[in-house]
Image (cartoon, rainbow, N blue to C red):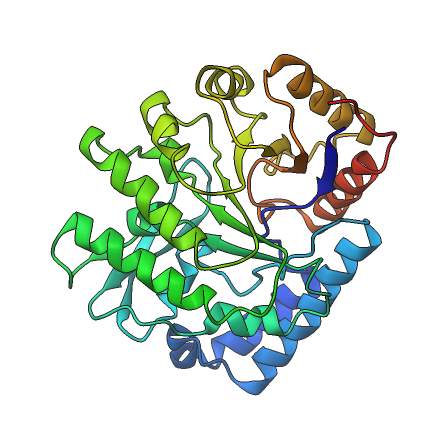
Amino acid sequence: MTELVATTPGLYPLPDWAKDELSDLKGHQKGDLISGDEGGEIVDAYQRARTEVVDAQVDARLDRIVEGQLRWDDMLAHPLTVHDNVETGGIVRYYDNNNFYRDPQVQGELTASGDVAAELESVDADADELQAVLPGPYSLADLATDEFYGDEAGFLDAIADFLVGEIEQFPAHETLFLLEPSLVENEPADDANEHASEVIDRVAAATDANVVVHTYWGAVPERTYAHLMDADVDAIGFDFVTDADESLYNINEYGTKDAIAMGLVDGQNTLVESPETIRDRVDWVLENTHTDFDLAYLTSNTELFYLPVNKFEAKLGALGDAATLAEVDA
């Protein structure tokens, strides 16, 4: 039997009240926001919003609870954009969505900041339910501009070391999702695939939690996927919304881990999938792969930031309900 675990890759939409309140507060404290040193009123507003999205996950009966990453205005680049040695440059567009973010320009040594750890510490959830979320090292390096290390391989190593330092400050957690869409969108050069896998492995080794490398915006190219399989992680995540056939091909051609993260819910489309539809998609994956999975994470393919709050909450509920329907034969 395959154990089904309902979860998400995080990066949630701000509650509507928080958008208005924080917009007004940030307008008066722009200088503090670049360094991540928000004033007390901003910290309080984020904490109230954080409590709201944690409660929404509990109400939806998700098996893993994320912090929500509501402060991550620059999405996956956030851990760098709040760093003292990073200058936030102009507005850029990441990947294939219609949102725009600041360009993190690394101008000094990347030492651990503890910023993400502090967010996790504030989540009211037991350790066996808590799921941490970070950009994977390859994607974070891909989204940043190096003005200090001077070498692509050295910069990727520095990013990995930075993430290891962040993880080492985390409270106890059950699962870590490393989000790696750049493996799809901007695959490593042939001679860099092995290094990309090595740094993912290094970051994963920094925690005792189960580590999921979640990929999306399509299927990972074959050569990159084959190298990714060398990383000692517990599961790889697949975007079955954008490219189900190629994702299935990678699994059957190159194998995968004993656990899998299935991106079955569309993180950008407001159409809410029913629990039955999600379970049909689970069945399709299980019936068409050659792997007997011990565990399957049921999740959205991408972050849920792009959705209206009511649709976001409805999709949480659908994932929770899908995981609690009758058990599936592996």
